[in-house]
Length: 444
Ligand SMILES: CO[C@H](O)c1c[n+]2c([nH]1)[C@H](O)[C@@H](O)[C@H](O)[C@H]2CO
Image (cartoon, rainbow, N blue to C red; front, side, top):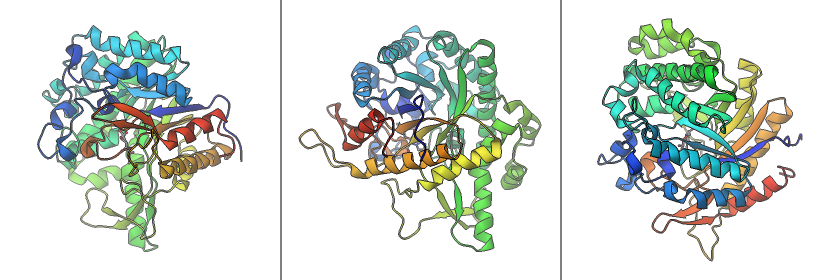
């Protein structure tokens, strides 16, 4: 088995709303998650990101932990409303100042920043103007991106425009389980289209001023038919278009899959098809967020892909109920290369929620997470050996954090956080990852 290149990035990932806390500090504006988490019933336990991991104030302590961990890269996101409180207008120097200091502190430890411009926390002031349903949203995002390019491109060399626009569109506008909590197939398709136009707007803006590399992070999930029955095979094929190709094709090919308008039917915004060509703004790398596979049965009532997810009885599951399926990562990486050609790839998220025990004598024994990481790194190594241009791996997540609608009930961290005291305790999986990084990934 081929080894990991010496240039390989061994990272960990977080996002602003999930770890920072202090959402309104120093002139920051509210985000849609600041609002949504306050709506009764939206988040388990009524939790909010008001404190989270208090990273806004403890970032130096957390960077010291990153240095101990031995990671050479760190993926984080910028809270748009911290930097531009009303979303499109006056800059907030204090908000930008936090990220300026964060980047400098990372570089001082030899840690490469990978900056996600948008990880779901739209400024609430823009939601009041229609949010991602407003055709102006692409320009709002481009203007915001420009601010960050000007301020940080002298030190940030890896940029991501959006984190999982599929999740933003489907959970935010179809299922309503994420902010802004709207429920409409047509709204989801329109929001998705504007998110893709926003991505292209930022990439185009970057080409004019940027000196480094820019990409996007997508949630990609191989779809398997639960049986050999034709209707299940066809349902898995439909979900593959819906989950994977709906975004990959416009971004990398400049066109929507022909099947997408059929899946959405009358809810598909016809104008979107004429503008699909605007979406393809060549990217320098693709971020792949991989967690599991889907096992699909036919479900004529399921909108829009008419497929339903099932679990194998003997499947090993994480605490999220997601099947542990490392081979799906290898297959997804190989498929991307076959389907879209040579493109550098980073695994920008991979990790597991586990029912971790409480810290005892300064230790948290989470062998399941260590095993999850090891098995997926072996799968990544397999893809490398078969020619995938894999440049790095970012474990999700550095810290236990605010897991969106699950609040603090699901823990993904390599490092345990006691949210009452903000005490950090590296878990067994952190030591496993640290030792692996020390060996450059050898002897997995
Ligand atoms: C199917 O999983 C998705 O790809 C996914 C999983 N996750 C994500 N996307 C998000 O990018 C993170 O903010 C979540 O905290 C993380 C864990 O739930």
